[in-house]
Image (tube, rainbow, N blue to C red; front, top):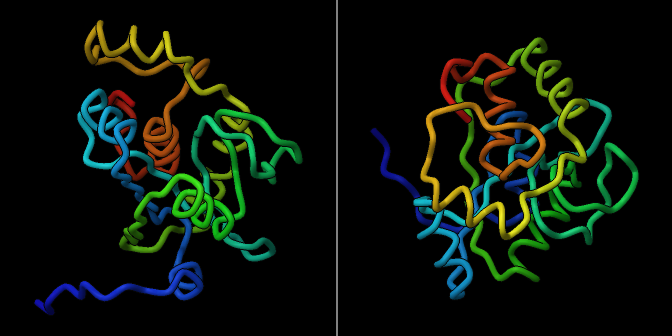
Length: 176
């Protein structure tokens, strides 16, 4: 097994290597970032999934509170589940939100059917609101019920999980 390289990959090179299904993981050091990790029991603050189709630039599929970037699916700016230009999204998360980014490539590469399923999920979920702060607190206080999350409010990891389920990469019986 080859040793893992700790070298930094320039953003343009990482975007060029990105394929549909690859994950972009983000982690910050602020007090809010640490609180997110504690409350969600996650090692990262944010996750987005790449969607790379022939006739479009690489895109990031994720849910976020911000509405600064154009959602390329709807053509407007909104909070919640969004499809952004991948490079612009990474620049925003690393710059404005002061996060460190990692690219995790999916292996093996997705098929055309999986890609179609991902796009159908985008069509279904794009624009779904991100949970309000009170809803976030309520979910945390109730604990993690082992049930499927409703689509009326969605976190970034739930967007990726639901998309992976539709693509056949995760068992649909597992809760998102």
